[in-house]
Length: 230
Image (tube, rainbow, N blue to C red):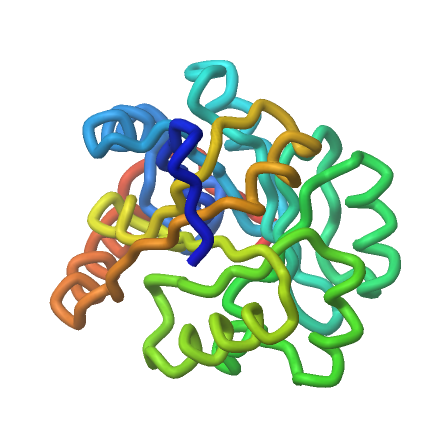
């Protein structure tokens, strides 16, 4: 991984969900508190096809939260950071990218080789690279480590900046995978900062998968805001 010894690096969680995603148990207040306890200095909330939770979290902790969105296109998923307007799911890849770029969002491809979670065929992934800013090379929720290994090798081969994220759907998972890089405050500064990254992470264990699933299942029994957008 590229590193910088001359600049102070901050710890960033680039992939996290809240109860505004149907498959997450994370409440905003608990998520913010836990992120601070675990030394996370920037927390990107990337709910599925909605920015409502991220915007609310930004009001609660403006210095911590990055407003993001994990968008399901007609082909696969993309993540946009520093989003101001929500992007609906199911659009063409071209239209989704157009709407992200209109907001000057920083664009990443999550879990690109995970065929179980909206991964991308290799030929389409290669076509996408000139349109995006980074590739997620470590995702703690991948069930097979080979998916992360392929992503890292591909990013190195193509010379594209690398990110890691826990893809946390429960508090058990928060911070399992993080990226350390120079401080940034907007999409343009992030594009510069990702040239110098340190990736660290561990896969979600079978036991913690069970804990996460239990927490998510129990959360559905507790009244609270949940997204209806899938």
